[in-house]
Amino acid sequence: MPVINRIADFATDMTAWRQHLHAHPELRFECFETAAFVVNQLRDFGVDEIHEGIATSGVVAIIEGCAAGPTIGLRADMDALPIEETTGLPYASTIKGKMHACGHDGHTTMLLGAAKYLAETRNFAGRVALIFQPAEENGGGAEVMVNEGVMDRFGIKEVYALHNTPGAPLGSFHTTPGPIMAAVDTFDIHIKGRGGHGAMPHETADPIVAAVGIVNAIQTIVSRNHATHDDLVVSVTQIHTGSADNIIPETAYINGTVRSFDSAVQGMVMARLDEIVAGHAAAYRVQADLTYQVGYPATVNDPDCTTFAASVARDIAADVVDDAGREMGAEDFAYMLNARPGAYLFVGNGDTAGLHHPAYDFDDRAAPFGASFFARLVEKALPVA
Image (cartoon, rainbow, N blue to C red; front, top):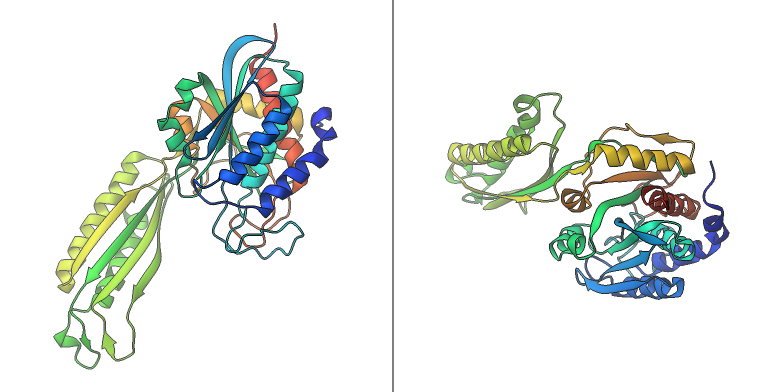
């Protein structure tokens, strides 16, 4: 089950592109140098149209096939993370405090590889819209691109994306129909009490005791308020308060994340957080203010598109799982799948450090698999009569 021979021929070029991108990471919407590199490559490939400055630094390129037909969208994210790299590689990040710790350099490279092949061969009836997106990491760049009209502007009928998976066999693929990644929300709780001397707690309204009570009650949202078959995660990830052993502080802060797939479950969590915070504020005689921020929605694969994409993957690799189940991570490609049918798949990155780890590196041997998947998907979705 080989990668496409022509793509294998320029695998060395793809490695060079990826390692250049790895050495020059950019964050959120500020992917200007990355976009410029992408545009230069696309011009060399001879694509038909290049549209820049979408969602600040995003790029959409069009490749026309050998005959008329619909348009398939292929998306790659370009942004890096605010992490200090520890790999020590010759092509390690040259920018302190920034690195490609999630493999978006590899995703961009895979789409560039597909673009080079498709611009050369044009063995399809229709058009390809190559979507190079900024700000996947906490920026919602996909939502901005959708809101700026990329789906309608370029007549995109379906849209697909890949993400690498450390720990999965190199070049393998897995996906699932329906929900594949969770909606992600965050909450902040600011507690204000009355501070005082640690030896005289009766003269205070202790925000620490209130914070501990709130956190303990939050743990019951999953265990006592939702059905066991509904996937849900509610995690408290920060508590900040206090400054010395003999001072009861004035304030405390709690922060956390909520991961869900169903809007009713999400609504239940929001209601319970409101009740827990208000109830504990009254019980402990403190003021407690909850802010709930709704983030990326759940990433939901179209079942028919998923079945089709898995069949394409089987043309490239022997190891393909099409019912892998869903994950509690989140992905802003959800906004594109809300706008158009399509599918999100994972490609194996082999035995590497995990995503968002300072020692992570995309395995360049995975790039021809991803590029071949994108290219073959277009050829099978838009066959020449």
